[in-house]
Length: 292
Image 1 (cartoon, one colour):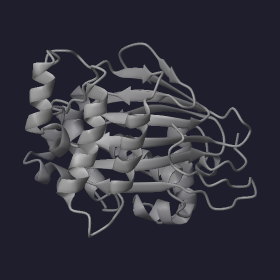
Image 2 (image 1 turned 45 degrees about the horizontal axis):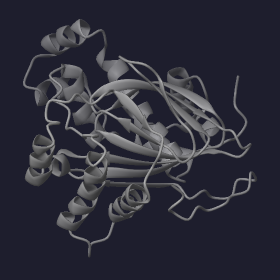
Image 3 (image 1 turned 180 degrees about the vertical axis):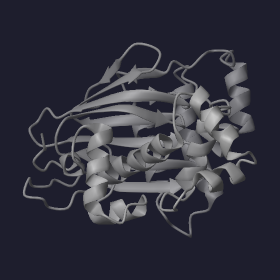
């Protein structure tokens, strides 16, 4: 599983080799690091994901289904369209580290891939919310890292090539009867709002603007969200905080810059909101002293 070269960092705060690359229709690649073990609850996973754990131990508890754990050198597969809890543990006294690939519909709707799923009589097989792959073949590990690198910004690399490299990972999993599926469209109004907000996190979203974008009145919007047990204010804050968490884990951007990118002009106000949501300070993600 140790395919990619890792940058060894000192606990003095040297920059970590965090990366986050996005090609919206195709997928997302992230190299996540945490300086201490943290429990992160109620995270929405929209796309199917493959996670290779490099350091520490990762446990995933889906909203429905049993908890699944992966050790270094193992893979976790997550179905898209679900809410999960993560527990990332540090076991070597240094950090937790894992590499992510998330797959877009433009990859998994490939006709040959779908035909192969059908031919192997797996079309009706349900993908569990979370599953661990204890043994990772060299072929899968190499394809995984090639796909992650392919998602990095590079104008000379066409989307069609990146798509094929992501499909290679899907086919390696399919060889072990593991199918990645595009989640069915989220019919909940909160799901539609999450997708809308994620494109412009730093906008000053108002109830009127969101209702207008969804072609409904503000009263209808409030009623629909109430039926799902959430308020618009809570939803906006949660999308911003979840995005901030990813940026803290998978980039080396300053906390103040991350706060601004998710809609907070004040880093201190952002830190308060982040702690309210997750129970720890933004600096804890990178291993600084954790607050009470």
